[in-house]
Length: 314
Image (tube, rainbow, N blue to C red; front, side, top):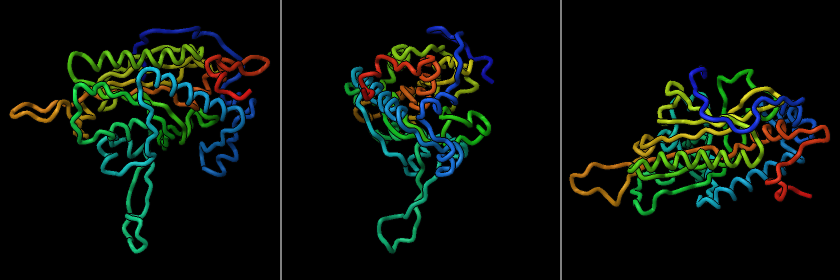
């Protein structure tokens, strides 16, 4: 299905091969406990431990600091959302294949027997998209740039048998996300789209991770995105490209469903305009850890990228 996707550009050496894959390396550095994780949490359950906990925290800090320096406001989001709000941000297919449902009591009163359905977030894009639900955003306040930080939960229905070992594809992981609300005018959102992609590319270049950028053909786009670029890192131990970043301009698709309008308030007879909304992965930590381990393995151990060393224990 990916055959028509066009490679736009390449950075670094995407042909070198190395000895071990991330599946072996997480165990070799004593940073992962999968068998006990599966006993406790079920399939794809894991404990991250030791050096990989510090590496993950280093990535979170470095990603947040990088985005903060570019004018993004860090946001730590709710991990679950009310059903009616999730229905406005998620695709129907996500309810079947991706989202975990959480059942709780309808209120905090002991005698209340009603139940309340919520959904665990698959990405902080979901709560941040709903942050300005039902609002009018003023032109002078745009663009609004958020660096979302959250744990993400994904059922991964349909990925049976793929990446079952290691931490590349798991049900629970941390992610830092770029999210921007933009003016719908003057090609503004497309300029921001390029900026967001450049920010992600700089991040992985600074970590010494080779990659290529792939333009996703319209047939594989979800309903919301009108253009999507993926950054796929080269994994020299696995001998494959794997997706680390997805960057989408959803133009006004999400904003219409969430009624996030552009302008002060509606002038008489004027047509309502909606803001444009964009999202891009900055760093899904478990996947980035896999890429760092494979690319920076040496016979002596793992070479930690310089940019992360200040965030690591001595």
